[in-house]
Length: 318
Image 1 (cartoon, one colour):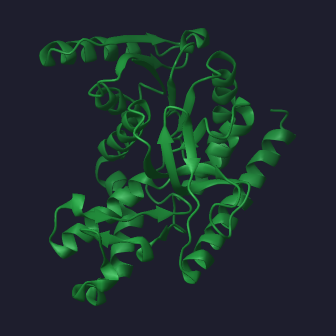
Image 2 (spheres, rainbow, N blue to C red; image 1 turned 135 degrees about the vertical axis):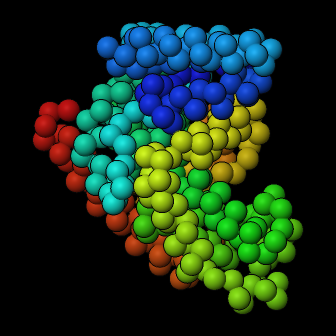
């Protein structure tokens, strides 16, 4: 059984994440963590969740705190805090605004929960994962970000819709930045185990329109309801279940890579990785030359912003 801590639990994503992971059978304690002054909100949220559990007949402990020491003995810590993206903003626009917060939270997690796995959701997630890795002092396999996992699920839905098949029949993924330079791996996409390139309808697949749908999905939701909530929350829950269940599934998350994909090195970015109780381990893959080229451009974009953000943090004495 496991303790999961959600930092930023009073926010939209944090609240739904708490509800989503409460359905995972390996979780027996959820800690709702927030900044000083948010105690009343956290208390109310804990009470509301307890009511939900009572209605479901679920036995699960929910606690809340603003005291760093209380995150001790967490198996997984999820960071959802940060300035949310507004309509018209690129995720990279949030880099400097969120970096100081992430650095501070990462240092706290590294001190009080050094053996935990640390999942970053704060945007821009690839850059923030690098910040968290540096300031937590934790191992590379312990610190990772939501990355392109949700983007991959969005691509999966669009392909399933086009071919008129159940979404579970589609296997695909997006690598690179969780942002405009993301790279779909068409070469690795299958339906029912069959490469889409071997399916007659593939030549009519509107790849550009599908990728436009994926890239703008978040901004469309933000424009209509103010924030993305259920998609990120369930994507986070899937990752937590995979880890705590020791499932060894391969999901596409933001992880520190060395040379697993040609065109990348020493950077946190969205890549296929094996997830289990020991952490997150990028998988070495071979992709088409044009995908390598696109991934290299995406990695360089992330690397440049990461370098700038880390440099600014150091200059500020963080």
